[in-house]
Image (cartoon, rainbow, N blue to C red; front, top):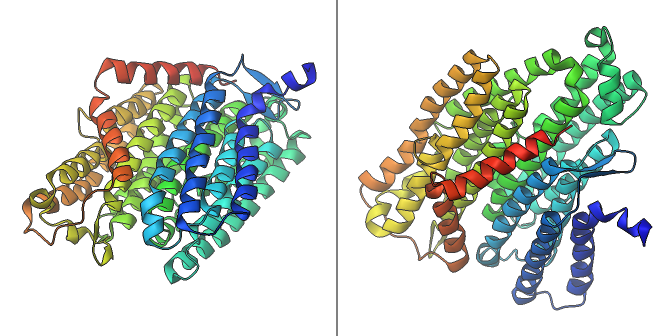
Length: 482
């Protein structure tokens, strides 16, 4: 019994994996139809709820496998965000995947396994567990991106994601091997101890290993210049899968980024800080400029995601607990905005099928004022307009940079936000001021639920009873990171 209790921190991951395997066995022996796929999806959501309860009820912080698995406040906060993003995206799958005739029972199982991989990423304390979690997540996502095997765009999206993902994994592994050669250990604590030595910052094994490791992680967060897969995969994958890709994996990868640089590389902060600053600036600028000419709303959201990852990297560049808190707050708000926006995108459909062209939103306020209002609020929030949640996300991000003396980085972020506001406001202008196009079909229940909950959180973040718990929890999580 004592031996089992020692593995208690792994209970959320065990729940997800055993739940996925049990649903796989259940699904194999059931008829292959939409009804059974819906049943498996509901059960997968239930597994996520149970895993979330296990995360909340976990005991004191602990480490397993000689520090390879870390269960601390930071990991728990991130895991709850991952579950929120994964659960919201899974809820969006029901109707749309049924309409596309791609609603297979394997879909929620693959998303459960991807979520388990993300949990391992959030708790990684070793290069081995880092890679294990990253690949468990990635292999499942390669499949779901191409789950519509009869659709050329979906197959292309899956292939591009796989090829570029394999390239980034190779670079990450190469970086990990160099770091192992430098430190003689794969544990973050051991690498940190070796990197704290005199002259470590000039050691080529450490510097090149750090660069290649960050390149591999930067691909997962779609930071520039490793963003090339994002617009094509977002456009080609089914929209609920795009919502999943835009939310949960980004949180897990950003958490991994934070843990690697703050726990494994504190002794070489000047070296990794330069890389993070470059990634942040490039992502903010390219994301803001690249979205301006987009006509497909999913591609616009792809560039928006790239820019948002740049803003999330701004507080990380500060390299302080306040910076980590800024990253966590930003990612929590980003999930809400993203899921709400994709719920609106899924509601863009007519009798002929889904509509993705931004121009088709013309005059939406006269056909469906509720949806137009919700999408406008999400666009305003993504642009960082007060008093919506997106404003506070950028406030905490830029404040951390200013407190660290990175004034020019905060200024560039503000300028990029102003440029980015153009394409968000353009969507609002089309909905409220252009001549009305043909109306869309009604909003379906599950999409409406995600839309309404997201809207309430985006509008209500100004309220202390919503903002204070998030800010305080993020602060506790950031200070638990060691």
